[in-house]
Length: 308
Image (cartoon, rainbow, N blue to C red; front, top):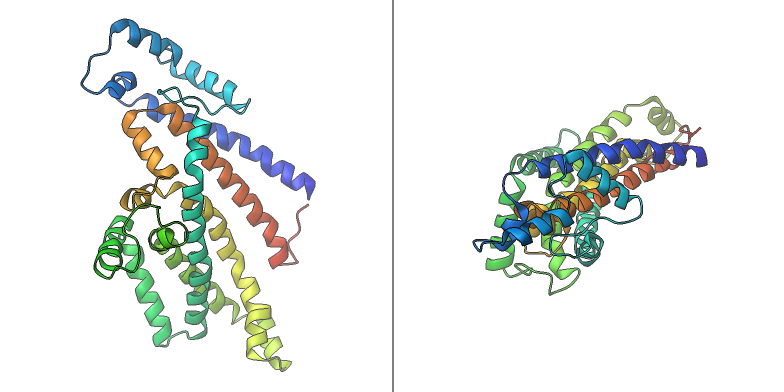
């Protein structure tokens, strides 16, 4: 097991390097001067502009800038914003909001997605199955920003069930509605994936053997079929956890939540490369750890799977 974990962590190094370099290059080629962008319409003296370019290595070639960034990253330094604030401090200030939002959305995906999938799978071809398939198809087809604005208007403004925006109400009140919006796309996929996997496993030989032995339907479904059916679902949920952390940009913007996603959006507008790359690096690490946790869970769900 120890060798497996070490091997997976080593595999994550090229992923981390490729991802951070790609983001760094995309920010590098954006038009405009980021220092001048911070000043807006006010002119910046050439001497000040030159000094800031030198301090933040903006006149260096892309490869040189990236190499200097990596040198700091290996020492735990995520860089410095063009306002002089360490990127690590920016992440620390906003990370809690994104974690709360991401975990709330992930909870909805796990609980509601699996429950709906099991309900549809056990009622294959009936009205419950058709209802789940139809509803999830609509959710997948509608962009998340439309779902967000509609939920905000109907549930927040007109019905007054949830806060409209901001995190002043705290958890869970301020995070339930944006969490549902953020989870809507993944929840639909979890429900459909659970349903398809459950329907397939219900036709397996071991299920017919369990039925022939006189086991109750509840024990066959929960103790045998559902456990094997969750393997592809766990794979999706593991990747989805990282996606929820990175994909909260639109949701945080709609509901005015001061999280990582909102910071990335603002940093892209200001061409703050160190901030964008630093946050991206942290998100890649979340992806790597989530995928590692998924691989370790395989052995618990299916004893036949071993990590050599």
